[in-house]
View (spheres, rainbow, N blue to C red):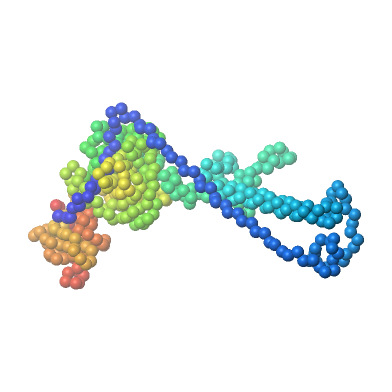
Length: 473
Protein backbone atom coordinates (compact mmCIF):
# COMPACT_ATOMS: atom_id res chain seq x y z
CA UNK A 1 0.00 0.00 0.00
CA UNK A 2 1.35 3.38 -0.90
CA UNK A 3 0.34 6.72 0.52
CA UNK A 4 1.06 10.37 0.39
CA UNK A 5 4.13 11.43 2.34
CA UNK A 6 4.76 14.83 3.87
CA UNK A 7 8.11 16.58 3.75
CA UNK A 8 7.32 18.47 6.97
CA UNK A 9 9.60 17.57 9.88
CA UNK A 10 7.39 15.24 11.93
CA UNK A 11 9.54 13.64 14.55
CA UNK A 12 9.22 11.42 17.54
CA UNK A 13 10.25 13.13 20.72
CA UNK A 14 13.73 11.73 21.30
CA UNK A 15 14.59 10.34 24.71
CA UNK A 16 16.54 12.83 26.73
CA UNK A 17 20.24 11.94 26.61
CA UNK A 18 22.00 13.08 29.78
CA UNK A 19 25.21 15.17 29.47
CA UNK A 20 28.52 13.80 30.68
CA UNK A 21 28.26 15.25 34.17
CA UNK A 22 24.44 14.83 34.21
CA UNK A 23 23.98 17.82 36.52
CA UNK A 24 20.67 19.57 36.47
CA UNK A 25 20.89 23.01 34.96
CA UNK A 26 19.65 25.88 37.07
CA UNK A 27 16.37 27.38 36.10
CA UNK A 28 16.55 30.50 33.97
CA UNK A 29 15.88 33.97 35.27
CA UNK A 30 12.35 34.74 36.24
CA UNK A 31 10.44 37.90 35.70
CA UNK A 32 7.68 39.43 37.71
CA UNK A 33 4.80 41.55 36.57
CA UNK A 34 3.52 44.31 38.83
CA UNK A 35 -0.19 44.25 39.52
CA UNK A 36 -1.68 47.26 37.73
CA UNK A 37 -3.25 49.83 39.99
CA UNK A 38 -6.82 51.03 39.50
CA UNK A 39 -7.12 54.44 37.90
CA UNK A 40 -9.51 56.46 40.05
CA UNK A 41 -11.06 59.61 38.55
CA UNK A 42 -12.58 62.02 41.00
CA UNK A 43 -14.74 65.05 40.11
CA UNK A 44 -16.44 67.70 42.17
CA UNK A 45 -19.18 70.14 41.36
CA UNK A 46 -20.33 73.37 43.01
CA UNK A 47 -23.67 75.01 42.77
CA UNK A 48 -24.06 78.70 42.75
CA UNK A 49 -27.08 80.76 43.54
CA UNK A 50 -28.24 84.30 43.70
CA UNK A 51 -28.27 86.49 46.77
CA UNK A 52 -31.86 87.72 46.94
CA UNK A 53 -32.73 90.35 49.51
CA UNK A 54 -36.33 90.22 50.66
CA UNK A 55 -37.74 93.71 50.49
CA UNK A 56 -39.07 93.46 54.04
CA UNK A 57 -35.79 92.36 55.63
CA UNK A 58 -33.82 94.89 57.64
CA UNK A 59 -30.51 95.90 56.02
CA UNK A 60 -28.42 94.27 58.77
CA UNK A 61 -30.05 90.83 58.44
CA UNK A 62 -28.50 88.00 56.40
CA UNK A 63 -30.48 87.25 53.25
CA UNK A 64 -32.91 84.32 53.36
CA UNK A 65 -35.03 82.50 50.85
CA UNK A 66 -37.43 81.24 53.54
CA UNK A 67 -40.39 83.05 55.05
CA UNK A 68 -39.41 84.09 58.57
CA UNK A 69 -40.73 86.10 61.43
CA UNK A 70 -38.15 88.55 62.64
CA UNK A 71 -37.33 88.84 66.30
CA UNK A 72 -34.84 90.99 68.10
CA UNK A 73 -31.35 89.66 67.36
CA UNK A 74 -29.64 87.66 70.14
CA UNK A 75 -26.62 89.11 71.83
CA UNK A 76 -23.59 87.33 70.28
CA UNK A 77 -20.98 85.69 72.46
CA UNK A 78 -17.71 87.37 71.45
CA UNK A 79 -15.73 84.21 72.32
CA UNK A 80 -17.73 81.78 70.21
CA UNK A 81 -19.72 83.69 67.63
CA UNK A 82 -18.43 86.03 65.00
CA UNK A 83 -20.65 89.07 64.45
CA UNK A 84 -22.46 89.24 61.11
CA UNK A 85 -21.22 91.60 58.46
CA UNK A 86 -21.94 95.17 59.43
CA UNK A 87 -21.96 94.34 63.15
CA UNK A 88 -18.49 95.09 64.47
CA UNK A 89 -16.69 93.16 61.62
CA UNK A 90 -15.95 94.11 58.04
CA UNK A 91 -17.88 92.32 55.25
CA UNK A 92 -14.61 90.81 53.99
CA UNK A 93 -14.40 88.73 57.14
CA UNK A 94 -17.75 87.14 56.29
CA UNK A 95 -16.50 86.28 52.84
CA UNK A 96 -13.38 84.66 54.33
CA UNK A 97 -15.63 82.67 56.63
CA UNK A 98 -17.59 81.43 53.63
CA UNK A 99 -14.37 80.38 51.91
CA UNK A 100 -13.31 78.43 55.03
CA UNK A 101 -16.63 76.56 54.97
CA UNK A 102 -16.12 75.67 51.29
CA UNK A 103 -12.54 74.55 51.97
CA UNK A 104 -13.68 72.39 54.87
CA UNK A 105 -16.36 70.80 52.69
CA UNK A 106 -13.81 70.02 49.96
CA UNK A 107 -11.36 68.49 52.47
CA UNK A 108 -14.13 66.34 53.91
CA UNK A 109 -15.12 65.14 50.46
CA UNK A 110 -11.50 64.24 49.67
CA UNK A 111 -11.21 62.27 52.92
CA UNK A 112 -14.37 60.32 52.10
CA UNK A 113 -13.11 59.72 48.57
CA UNK A 114 -9.79 58.42 49.91
CA UNK A 115 -11.65 55.97 52.09
CA UNK A 116 -13.73 54.73 49.16
CA UNK A 117 -10.61 54.38 47.00
CA UNK A 118 -8.87 52.36 49.71
CA UNK A 119 -11.92 50.13 49.98
CA UNK A 120 -11.89 49.46 46.22
CA UNK A 121 -8.18 48.67 46.27
CA UNK A 122 -8.52 46.09 49.03
CA UNK A 123 -11.62 44.48 47.59
CA UNK A 124 -10.01 44.20 44.17
CA UNK A 125 -6.75 42.65 45.39
CA UNK A 126 -6.64 39.28 43.66
CA UNK A 127 -2.96 38.64 44.27
CA UNK A 128 -2.19 34.98 44.81
CA UNK A 129 0.28 36.03 47.49
CA UNK A 130 -2.58 37.21 49.66
CA UNK A 131 -3.86 34.18 51.54
CA UNK A 132 -6.00 33.68 54.57
CA UNK A 133 -5.00 31.15 57.25
CA UNK A 134 -7.04 27.99 56.78
CA UNK A 135 -9.53 26.82 59.31
CA UNK A 136 -8.18 23.70 60.96
CA UNK A 137 -10.62 20.83 60.59
CA UNK A 138 -8.79 18.15 62.44
CA UNK A 139 -6.36 17.23 59.70
CA UNK A 140 -9.13 16.08 57.38
CA UNK A 141 -9.37 19.09 55.09
CA UNK A 142 -8.10 22.65 54.86
CA UNK A 143 -9.51 25.55 52.92
CA UNK A 144 -8.58 29.06 51.93
CA UNK A 145 -10.94 31.95 51.42
CA UNK A 146 -10.90 33.57 48.00
CA UNK A 147 -8.98 36.84 47.81
CA UNK A 148 -11.24 39.84 48.01
CA UNK A 149 -13.97 37.87 49.79
CA UNK A 150 -15.34 38.30 53.29
CA UNK A 151 -12.27 36.86 54.93
CA UNK A 152 -13.26 38.09 58.36
CA UNK A 153 -16.22 35.74 58.48
CA UNK A 154 -14.63 32.83 56.65
CA UNK A 155 -11.34 32.74 58.49
CA UNK A 156 -11.85 34.79 61.64
CA UNK A 157 -12.31 33.70 65.23
CA UNK A 158 -13.91 35.10 68.35
CA UNK A 159 -12.80 34.74 71.94
CA UNK A 160 -15.19 32.91 74.21
CA UNK A 161 -15.19 34.94 77.44
CA UNK A 162 -16.32 31.93 79.39
CA UNK A 163 -13.51 29.62 78.39
CA UNK A 164 -10.84 31.95 77.08
CA UNK A 165 -10.60 29.85 73.91
CA UNK A 166 -10.85 31.00 70.33
CA UNK A 167 -13.85 29.67 68.39
CA UNK A 168 -14.00 29.76 64.58
CA UNK A 169 -16.85 31.87 63.28
CA UNK A 170 -19.40 30.46 60.87
CA UNK A 171 -19.44 32.14 57.46
CA UNK A 172 -21.81 35.05 57.27
CA UNK A 173 -24.73 34.79 54.83
CA UNK A 174 -23.45 35.48 51.36
CA UNK A 175 -19.80 35.17 52.40
CA UNK A 176 -17.40 33.59 49.92
CA UNK A 177 -16.86 29.85 50.38
CA UNK A 178 -13.88 27.85 49.18
CA UNK A 179 -14.27 26.16 45.79
CA UNK A 180 -13.06 22.68 44.98
CA UNK A 181 -9.77 22.42 43.02
CA UNK A 182 -11.56 20.69 40.14
CA UNK A 183 -13.74 23.74 39.52
CA UNK A 184 -11.19 26.53 39.99
CA UNK A 185 -7.94 24.73 39.08
CA UNK A 186 -8.79 21.84 36.73
CA UNK A 187 -5.17 21.40 35.64
CA UNK A 188 -4.05 21.09 39.27
CA UNK A 189 -6.77 18.55 40.02
CA UNK A 190 -5.88 16.51 36.94
CA UNK A 191 -2.18 16.57 37.82
CA UNK A 192 -2.86 15.48 41.40
CA UNK A 193 -4.84 12.48 40.14
CA UNK A 194 -2.32 11.28 37.54
CA UNK A 195 1.12 12.24 38.87
CA UNK A 196 1.28 9.12 41.10
CA UNK A 197 0.86 6.92 37.98
CA UNK A 198 3.50 8.44 35.66
CA UNK A 199 7.06 7.12 35.89
CA UNK A 200 10.45 8.00 34.45
CA UNK A 201 12.17 5.36 32.32
CA UNK A 202 15.96 5.40 32.00
CA UNK A 203 17.55 3.28 29.29
CA UNK A 204 21.27 2.59 29.44
CA UNK A 205 23.24 4.27 26.64
CA UNK A 206 20.02 5.65 25.13
CA UNK A 207 18.36 8.27 27.28
CA UNK A 208 15.28 9.05 29.36
CA UNK A 209 11.57 8.80 28.67
CA UNK A 210 8.32 8.43 30.55
CA UNK A 211 5.68 5.77 31.11
CA UNK A 212 2.14 5.25 32.44
CA UNK A 213 1.23 2.54 34.98
CA UNK A 214 -2.07 1.22 33.64
CA UNK A 215 -2.54 -2.13 35.38
CA UNK A 216 -2.15 -3.29 38.98
CA UNK A 217 0.06 -6.15 37.83
CA UNK A 218 2.81 -3.57 37.30
CA UNK A 219 2.27 -3.00 33.58
CA UNK A 220 3.59 0.27 32.16
CA UNK A 221 2.91 1.53 28.64
CA UNK A 222 5.49 3.71 26.91
CA UNK A 223 6.82 4.40 23.43
CA UNK A 224 8.78 1.87 21.41
CA UNK A 225 11.37 4.52 20.62
CA UNK A 226 11.94 5.02 24.38
CA UNK A 227 12.90 1.41 25.17
CA UNK A 228 14.57 0.97 21.77
CA UNK A 229 16.14 -2.52 21.70
CA UNK A 230 16.61 -2.81 25.48
CA UNK A 231 15.39 -5.85 27.38
CA UNK A 232 15.50 -4.17 30.79
CA UNK A 233 15.19 -0.55 31.89
CA UNK A 234 15.33 1.42 35.13
CA UNK A 235 11.97 2.75 36.30
CA UNK A 236 11.87 5.68 38.68
CA UNK A 237 8.57 5.62 40.57
CA UNK A 238 6.85 8.87 41.66
CA UNK A 239 8.07 8.13 45.20
CA UNK A 240 11.64 8.37 43.96
CA UNK A 241 12.28 4.63 44.34
CA UNK A 242 14.13 3.10 41.39
CA UNK A 243 13.29 -0.44 40.30
CA UNK A 244 14.09 -2.68 37.36
CA UNK A 245 11.57 -2.99 34.57
CA UNK A 246 11.38 -5.79 32.03
CA UNK A 247 10.46 -4.91 28.44
CA UNK A 248 7.67 -7.28 27.36
CA UNK A 249 7.58 -6.11 23.77
CA UNK A 250 7.31 -3.19 21.35
CA UNK A 251 5.43 -2.42 18.15
CA UNK A 252 7.40 -0.13 15.86
CA UNK A 253 4.44 0.54 13.53
CA UNK A 254 2.41 2.21 16.28
CA UNK A 255 5.33 3.18 18.58
CA UNK A 256 3.84 1.38 21.60
CA UNK A 257 5.81 -0.71 24.10
CA UNK A 258 5.07 -2.37 27.45
CA UNK A 259 7.34 -2.58 30.49
CA UNK A 260 6.55 -4.55 33.64
CA UNK A 261 7.75 -4.01 37.22
CA UNK A 262 7.27 -6.16 40.31
CA UNK A 263 3.64 -5.94 41.39
CA UNK A 264 4.71 -5.84 45.06
CA UNK A 265 6.10 -2.34 44.63
CA UNK A 266 3.97 0.55 45.85
CA UNK A 267 2.35 2.39 42.93
CA UNK A 268 -0.93 3.79 41.67
CA UNK A 269 -2.80 2.84 38.49
CA UNK A 270 -4.04 5.40 35.97
CA UNK A 271 -7.65 5.66 34.83
CA UNK A 272 -7.88 5.53 31.02
CA UNK A 273 -10.46 7.17 28.74
CA UNK A 274 -11.28 6.55 25.09
CA UNK A 275 -11.21 8.96 22.18
CA UNK A 276 -14.99 9.27 22.30
CA UNK A 277 -14.60 11.34 25.48
CA UNK A 278 -12.21 13.83 23.85
CA UNK A 279 -13.37 17.15 22.41
CA UNK A 280 -11.37 19.71 20.49
CA UNK A 281 -10.73 22.71 22.74
CA UNK A 282 -10.89 20.87 26.05
CA UNK A 283 -8.14 21.22 28.65
CA UNK A 284 -5.18 18.88 28.18
CA UNK A 285 -2.45 18.31 30.76
CA UNK A 286 0.88 16.68 29.82
CA UNK A 287 2.86 14.85 32.50
CA UNK A 288 6.31 13.33 32.09
CA UNK A 289 10.06 13.84 32.43
CA UNK A 290 11.18 16.37 29.81
CA UNK A 291 14.98 16.58 29.77
CA UNK A 292 15.02 14.28 32.79
CA UNK A 293 12.93 16.65 34.95
CA UNK A 294 10.63 14.04 36.49
CA UNK A 295 6.96 14.71 37.28
CA UNK A 296 6.78 17.85 35.16
CA UNK A 297 3.28 19.16 34.45
CA UNK A 298 2.36 21.38 31.50
CA UNK A 299 -1.08 22.37 30.26
CA UNK A 300 -2.85 23.42 27.09
CA UNK A 301 -5.83 22.24 25.07
CA UNK A 302 -6.72 19.52 22.62
CA UNK A 303 -6.02 21.17 19.26
CA UNK A 304 -7.32 18.37 17.00
CA UNK A 305 -8.22 14.68 17.00
CA UNK A 306 -7.63 11.95 14.41
CA UNK A 307 -4.57 13.79 13.14
CA UNK A 308 -2.62 11.27 11.04
CA UNK A 309 1.09 11.57 11.80
CA UNK A 310 3.66 9.75 9.70
CA UNK A 311 7.12 8.83 10.89
CA UNK A 312 9.88 6.34 10.34
CA UNK A 313 11.22 4.34 13.26
CA UNK A 314 14.25 2.17 12.61
CA UNK A 315 13.21 1.78 8.98
CA UNK A 316 9.58 0.97 9.81
CA UNK A 317 7.01 3.37 8.38
CA UNK A 318 4.38 4.69 10.78
CA UNK A 319 0.95 6.15 10.06
CA UNK A 320 -1.00 6.68 13.30
CA UNK A 321 -4.06 8.77 14.10
CA UNK A 322 -3.18 10.97 17.06
CA UNK A 323 -4.48 13.66 19.39
CA UNK A 324 -2.88 17.03 18.68
CA UNK A 325 -2.20 19.34 21.63
CA UNK A 326 -0.42 22.59 22.38
CA UNK A 327 0.48 21.45 25.90
CA UNK A 328 4.30 21.70 25.87
CA UNK A 329 5.94 18.34 25.09
CA UNK A 330 9.71 18.02 24.89
CA UNK A 331 12.37 15.29 24.69
CA UNK A 332 11.83 13.00 27.66
CA UNK A 333 8.03 13.43 27.60
CA UNK A 334 7.68 10.45 25.26
CA UNK A 335 5.57 7.75 26.86
CA UNK A 336 4.05 10.17 29.36
CA UNK A 337 0.40 10.95 29.94
CA UNK A 338 -1.97 13.40 28.25
CA UNK A 339 -4.77 13.95 30.74
CA UNK A 340 -8.25 15.47 30.71
CA UNK A 341 -9.64 17.67 33.47
CA UNK A 342 -11.27 14.65 35.11
CA UNK A 343 -7.86 13.12 35.76
CA UNK A 344 -8.20 10.44 33.09
CA UNK A 345 -5.42 9.54 30.66
CA UNK A 346 -6.65 10.18 27.11
CA UNK A 347 -3.36 9.77 25.26
CA UNK A 348 0.32 8.84 25.43
CA UNK A 349 2.62 11.70 24.43
CA UNK A 350 4.76 10.58 21.53
CA UNK A 351 5.99 13.15 19.03
CA UNK A 352 6.29 16.83 18.20
CA UNK A 353 6.51 18.84 15.03
CA UNK A 354 9.44 21.24 14.97
CA UNK A 355 10.78 24.12 12.94
CA UNK A 356 14.26 22.62 12.90
CA UNK A 357 14.92 23.11 16.61
CA UNK A 358 14.66 20.43 19.26
CA UNK A 359 12.17 22.23 21.50
CA UNK A 360 8.41 22.48 21.53
CA UNK A 361 6.57 25.01 19.35
CA UNK A 362 3.05 24.08 20.41
CA UNK A 363 2.52 21.12 18.07
CA UNK A 364 2.56 17.91 20.09
CA UNK A 365 0.96 14.55 19.37
CA UNK A 366 -0.30 11.78 21.63
CA UNK A 367 -1.43 8.26 20.73
CA UNK A 368 -5.08 7.87 21.83
CA UNK A 369 -5.64 5.43 24.67
CA UNK A 370 -7.84 3.30 22.42
CA UNK A 371 -4.87 2.59 20.16
CA UNK A 372 -2.25 2.37 22.90
CA UNK A 373 -4.29 -0.05 25.00
CA UNK A 374 -5.19 -2.19 21.97
CA UNK A 375 -1.53 -2.67 21.05
CA UNK A 376 -0.44 -3.06 24.68
CA UNK A 377 -2.95 -5.86 25.19
CA UNK A 378 -1.65 -7.66 22.10
CA UNK A 379 1.92 -7.36 23.40
CA UNK A 380 1.02 -8.72 26.85
CA UNK A 381 -0.99 -11.57 25.33
CA UNK A 382 1.92 -12.50 23.07
CA UNK A 383 -0.17 -12.01 19.93
CA UNK A 384 1.41 -11.26 16.53
CA UNK A 385 1.87 -7.56 15.85
CA UNK A 386 1.39 -7.82 12.08
CA UNK A 387 -0.81 -5.19 10.47
CA UNK A 388 -3.72 -5.91 8.18
CA UNK A 389 -3.27 -5.63 4.41
CA UNK A 390 -5.84 -4.48 1.83
CA UNK A 391 -3.90 -4.29 -1.47
CA UNK A 392 -4.70 -0.92 -3.06
CA UNK A 393 -2.78 2.16 -4.08
CA UNK A 394 -4.63 5.31 -3.07
CA UNK A 395 -4.33 9.08 -3.24
CA UNK A 396 -6.27 12.11 -2.10
CA UNK A 397 -9.04 13.36 -4.44
CA UNK A 398 -8.25 16.66 -6.13
CA UNK A 399 -11.77 18.02 -5.70
CA UNK A 400 -15.05 16.91 -4.24
CA UNK A 401 -15.87 14.69 -1.30
CA UNK A 402 -13.04 13.74 1.07
CA UNK A 403 -11.84 10.16 1.11
CA UNK A 404 -9.20 7.84 -0.35
CA UNK A 405 -9.22 7.58 -4.15
CA UNK A 406 -8.23 4.16 -5.51
CA UNK A 407 -5.65 4.41 -8.30
CA UNK A 408 -4.55 0.74 -8.43
CA UNK A 409 -5.92 -2.61 -7.23
CA UNK A 410 -3.40 -5.44 -6.96
CA UNK A 411 -4.70 -8.72 -8.41
CA UNK A 412 -5.47 -11.50 -5.94
CA UNK A 413 -5.46 -9.19 -2.91
CA UNK A 414 -8.28 -8.68 -0.35
CA UNK A 415 -9.22 -5.47 -2.19
CA UNK A 416 -9.53 -7.32 -5.50
CA UNK A 417 -11.57 -10.10 -3.95
CA UNK A 418 -13.87 -7.57 -2.28
CA UNK A 419 -14.62 -5.93 -5.64
CA UNK A 420 -12.76 -2.62 -5.33
CA UNK A 421 -11.95 -1.00 -8.68
CA UNK A 422 -9.88 1.94 -9.89
CA UNK A 423 -11.80 5.18 -9.44
CA UNK A 424 -13.62 4.08 -6.29
CA UNK A 425 -13.60 6.74 -3.56
CA UNK A 426 -13.38 5.02 -0.17
CA UNK A 427 -15.38 7.16 2.28
CA UNK A 428 -15.78 4.78 5.23
CA UNK A 429 -13.86 1.85 6.70
CA UNK A 430 -15.57 -0.50 9.15
CA UNK A 431 -17.98 2.17 10.36
CA UNK A 432 -15.49 5.06 10.56
CA UNK A 433 -15.33 7.96 8.13
CA UNK A 434 -12.27 8.14 5.89
CA UNK A 435 -11.09 11.74 5.41
CA UNK A 436 -7.89 11.15 3.42
CA UNK A 437 -5.62 8.48 2.02
CA UNK A 438 -3.38 8.65 5.12
CA UNK A 439 -6.46 8.24 7.28
CA UNK A 440 -7.28 4.94 5.55
CA UNK A 441 -3.69 3.71 5.90
CA UNK A 442 -3.78 4.38 9.68
CA UNK A 443 -7.08 2.55 10.10
CA UNK A 444 -5.98 -0.52 8.12
CA UNK A 445 -2.71 -0.82 10.06
CA UNK A 446 -4.54 -1.05 13.38
CA UNK A 447 -6.26 -4.20 12.11
CA UNK A 448 -4.77 -7.67 12.10
CA UNK A 449 -4.77 -10.25 9.33
CA UNK A 450 -8.07 -12.13 9.21
CA UNK A 451 -10.24 -9.20 10.32
CA UNK A 452 -13.39 -8.78 8.22
CA UNK A 453 -14.35 -5.18 7.53
CA UNK A 454 -16.97 -3.23 5.61
CA UNK A 455 -15.79 -0.66 3.09
CA UNK A 456 -18.10 2.08 1.78
CA UNK A 457 -17.20 3.59 -1.61
CA UNK A 458 -18.63 6.21 -3.91
CA UNK A 459 -18.84 4.78 -7.45
CA UNK A 460 -20.46 6.60 -10.37
CA UNK A 461 -22.22 8.94 -7.94
CA UNK A 462 -23.76 6.14 -5.88
CA UNK A 463 -22.77 4.67 -2.54
CA UNK A 464 -21.74 0.99 -2.49
CA UNK A 465 -20.81 -1.20 0.49
CA UNK A 466 -18.21 -3.98 0.08
CA UNK A 467 -16.86 -6.57 2.50
CA UNK A 468 -13.17 -7.49 2.70
CA UNK A 469 -11.11 -9.91 4.79
CA UNK A 470 -7.70 -8.38 5.47
CA UNK A 471 -4.59 -10.30 4.61
CA UNK A 472 -0.88 -10.15 5.48
CA UNK A 473 1.21 -7.49 3.78
